[in-house]
Image 1 (cartoon, rainbow, N blue to C red):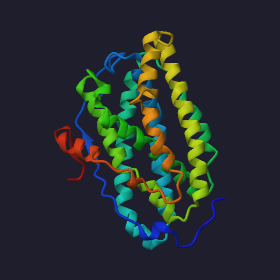
Image 2 (image 1 turned 60 degrees about the vertical axis):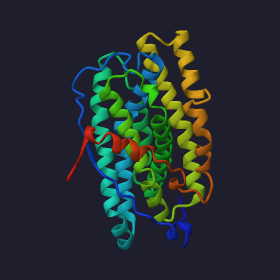
Image 3 (image 1 turned 120 degrees about the vertical axis):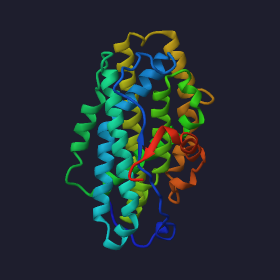
Image 4 (image 1 turned 90 degrees about the vertical axis):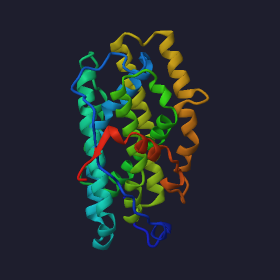
Length: 287
């Protein structure tokens, strides 16, 4: 069990995050090309794999943050209410749009093997301390924030991909960067321990990367491109190269293990800049 702590550093560092719920103005009812990501088989399979995890993952994040919010004292709930509503709205929109995207890529014969495994694992958490779910969410949100930052810093990865799909992935990345602190702050407000926070990060790292790579291989096998030299060359360049995702994310990933870590310490303007420059691609819900 996670043990409660008394006063901690978080209580003096609380900041509110304004989260805007946006409706993306793209049509995902239209078919998606087999190698939609700039004709690159590996990148297409990798992003398809990530998308396959989003519907069940986003729902778990929503449920965990809601449960954590309900477990807070009333005075703490007042401070988080608006942010939690924004978080839920953003994640629900991600879940819906990636569900539509997944329906399209399933037409290429791809099978989602990630979701059933995730469903079985998440069922084991039912009825336990709500802070476990919030800690798992915070760890996953750190991962997605790192990936989002990489995407926003390397939009050329999407190359000649069609505009609606570029918009989908970069919009999702921008919003992940926006709400990366919500679950973390709720975990701290619930007096979750540092030991369990980093323990869950270690577990999530192994599970997430294993599942992502396993589903990517599954997608490539179904696509018939697993054993092409171009596939492995792209994987090496985009994951492990000088500007590769895993290589450039390692240092900020490790910072999560510091006891004084907070997601806002890893800040850039890439998210806000993209949202400002692409305001015509979405409308604000409730505006």
